[in-house]
Image (tube, rainbow, N blue to C red):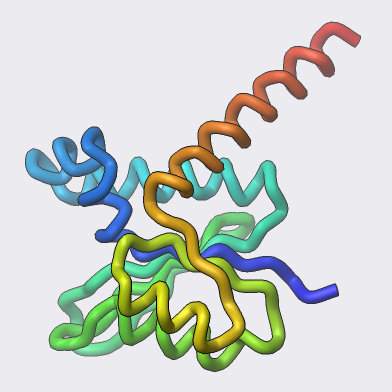
Length: 145
């Protein structure tokens, strides 16, 4: 069975979720850190591999992956996160089960073109909330036994 991946368009999510958008307007790194935290919890609970992609500012594409953490890409200056997402889906879409979380219609179309699926930023929020509730129930059940 193919591995399952969730590729998240970071800034699309940050600007779609009011609390992250507000946090970003104060300190943009705080919004990124909160999103990374939530997605790491989701990956831990769901066993779905999470890849988070942001627009970057450096001279080259950078990748950050901590042991047990999610994979994070930052595009290089002059390149968008969209182009990284497109490359990832084109390269791995036929090998793995890929879902992209974005509000960007062009990226949603890319997902379909390369045998992937997409969810809206709001649907991502619902999935994270559901997983969080499931995890809390599981912890309570384990603590009682």
